Image (cartoon, rainbow, N blue to C red; front, top):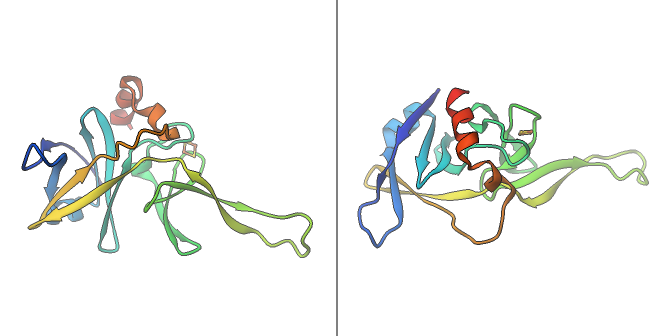
Length: 157
Ligand code: FES
C-alpha cells in the first residue's frame, strides 16, 4: 500500500532531518510517498530495512512506489513499473543485463550504468524515522522529474 504523508522539519534546526513517521507506521504502510523541501521521496520497507529515494524513476518519471523489489546479483533493486528499469536501493545505480556477443555460449551478466537515482539517508531515533536529503551537487538523472508538473502526475498515480 502507498501512504502519502506530509513531513515536519526534524528535531533540531542544526540537523537537516525530516520526520517521516513512527517506524511501526512506516513498516505497516510498507511504502510512503512524502514531500520533503519540495522533493517527492519514496520511503520503503524491505526485509527489515528502510530505504529512501526520489519517487520518480530516472528514465521517464515512472512511479517507483508501484515497483516490485528484486534481488539482482546480490543487490536489492526496485523495478520500475513502466519499463522495468532496475535501480539499486542502496546507492541508486541503474542496473542492467549485458551480453558480450564475442563470448560463446552467451552469458548475460549484470552491470551498472552508474548512479542515476538520488538516494536519501534514513535514520531512526527512538522508533521515529527521519530522512536526510542527499544534496550532493552533481546532477543525477532522477532530478529532472522533481518538478511541479511531475509532482501533480505522481499524486494522481
Ligand atoms: Fe522507469 Fe521507464 S520510467 S523504466
